[in-house]
Image 1 (spheres, rainbow, N blue to C red):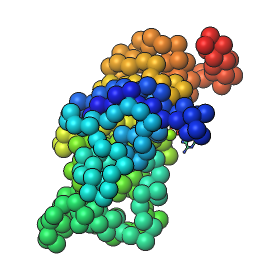
Image 2 (cartoon, rainbow, N blue to C red):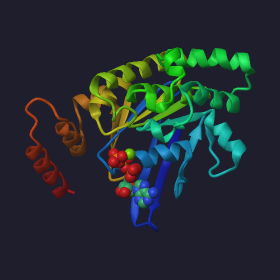
Image 3 (cartoon, rainbow, N blue to C red):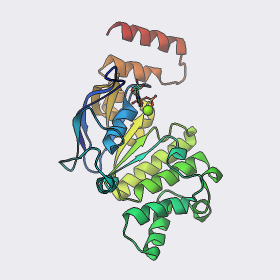
Image 4 (cartoon, rainbow, N blue to C red):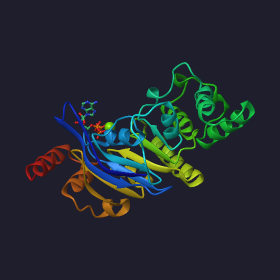
Length: 267
Ligand SMILES: Nc1ncnc2c1ncn2[C@@H]1O[C@H](COP(=O)(O)OP(=O)(O)OP(=O)(O)O)[C@@H](O)[C@H]1O
Ligand SMILES: [Mg+2]
């Protein structure tokens, strides 16, 4: 997947949410998008999956430009290429639908499998995300946050997409469940060769899933590179600020605020 000079504004151009953003993700690769709140991460994610239309710029899959805004057929086609997983699975899961039915719905729409084939595939998908028969029969509210996110991931995988875009997909989970989901994603990527775009405000989380990272600030990419290198030796002052803002032993919120003020004063 490649995006080229994406730009998206709101409020008649007064808000520039995404400004000249370009990057690419190789087949089976993984890219982290990090930046503070309001830096344009979600807008970028929505542009990639076609939920928003760019003012200008282009999105390519396998070298082919996506046609914006078209009808049901092209939406279906795109769904088999790219899927989005949200922070809050309540957004994508129907409260009246069991996990099994939620997955079956996607298989009906996209797989062309018959009843038996769908059951087999559903079991496989649930297994892939580590859910058993009890969870399969449960409604979203009967599941934990981590389990719900697993259902959302299984559902996204049901179209066999080439790319999974995850927008703060672990942000609402406690740290041990975060770790489980991050491991799961790494495992899924190994087994299915699906590429990942992983959006997070948390650089430490990105470290575990993304080979490469782009750092966004006020809609623009300010730094990019191999994740390990960017985290080890950040070049841009904003990346340094982000890294020093991560809560850890000896963390001082007052110091973080001062550093941020100093950084903004340099612009
Ligand atoms: N539908 C919209 N209408 C108007 N402005 C919007 C809209 N969506 C996003 N914006 C603005 O665009 C900018 C980027 O928002 P975006 O949601 O992409 O940020 P983000 O990096 O995902 O932030 P967060 O970490 O808080 O989720 C913000 O200034 C936001 O207020
Ligand atoms: Mg966001």
